[in-house]
Image (cartoon, rainbow, N blue to C red; front, side):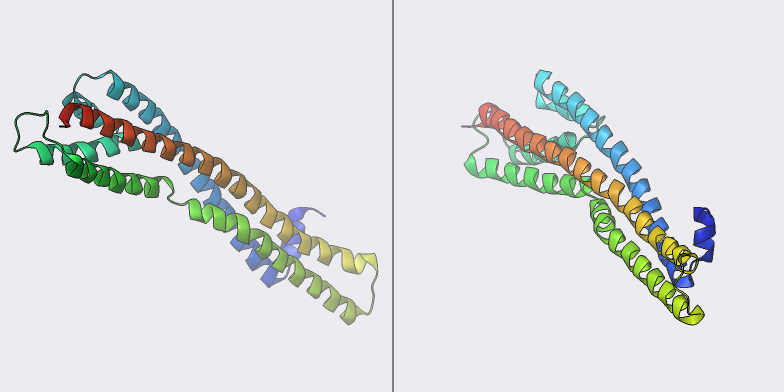
Length: 222
């Protein structure tokens, strides 16, 4: 008796639970593929932008380059900080001495706002992977318990506890647990893997913000 035959003979409740688990698994894999593509693109674009940032001779030149790296969170941070810098220095034609501690703090706040927005973008849909990893085993377990209860009910009806009577029902029930684990395990692995990569990007963003502020202070500070 194969798996598909067991599923076809399962109770309507177990079939409904299996459907829920399959939907969770499909969405989970779709998110895994999407997040992998997004994070890979963000990391690649950030490396390229950071190289340009450190080699460029002017912030205007970096700002022009930033438009080409929309996938990079560093480019978004730079653009936010540069816009604030331009706003604060537009009334002063001489760059030296135009930025004091108060204005530098305003630029820092703009960088923090941009950083928070980028972190939210990077963490988008991560909560679903966490939910899938924690919930689907219990949904599968519920299906197993329900299937075993149904098997015991059948034993009472036929008044026979032979292996032929019990085994098919228990096998049907255990499929729910197996599919629950099949949905949960990739979600948990992907969640932890992506979380590590996101933390690395956040650390890079923090370092970049400090580096950018240091340059502003050297060029525009009193």
